[in-house]
Image (cartoon, rainbow, N blue to C red; front, side):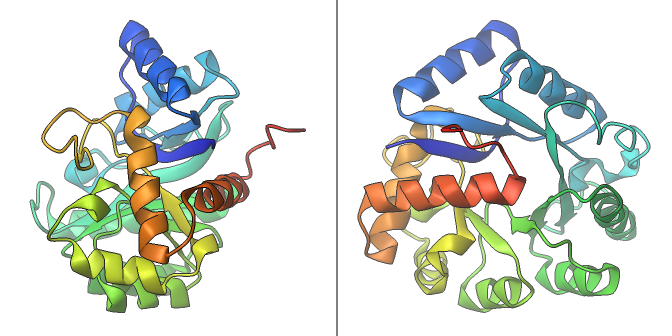
Amino acid sequence: MRWIDNHCHLSDGEAADAEIAAARAAGVEALIDVGTDTARSHQTIKNAQRYAGTVWATVGVHPHDATEGVEGIADLMGEAGVVAVGECGLDYHYDNSPRQTQRDVFAQHIGLAHKHNLPLVIHTREAWDDTFAILDSEGMPEHTVFHCFTGGPAEAEAGLARGGWLSISGIVTFKNASELRDAVALTPVDKLMVETDAPYLAPVPKRGAKNEPANLPLVGAQVAATLGIETESFAHIAWETTHKFYRLPDRDE
């Protein structure tokens, strides 16, 4: 089996070398390194260029840092290795940035995705109504993924009805995540991707430890079990889905 980590935050330098080596040993052959602010977006590009063919980059400003604006990332879309805009969106749980600023900057990210014909990576927490309202107003990009999806069946159906994909993290392995598993069960298999969100959200039985891309097969196995299919079958489908979503080159070509 081979896996692709749809969403992680790699370390820098030698620490990233170790994370990628461990991931490869676990069958995780490709990774999407996700930007969360201007500085981190520059680093994802460096990682993508250093590990070309294994790592790809996204550039974006997390809602926690929405006051930074998009000026620092607007010129990065054409850099080698960049495959998506984000992560971006709304986080009403922490409200680290004013909500109106979050909404404005989220809309600006959507505009960048349209302008550059790039996929959009969304972070949304306790803000589903506003997230969908802004997507409807600005026009949802053709390739849009709800990263670390934590909604239930209703939110899954709303996202899917708009043409979106769901990316499932290690939360799916948590005992109290029954609504998330219900959402996974109703989602077409080719609309699902898997992620670690490393270094956060380590799956059971690693929960509480620092997460890393090498743990992705634990997430994939739980998603497969929830869907009632073989893990190997899901790994193959998720690999194909993620490559098509980001328009990555086929490793076999």
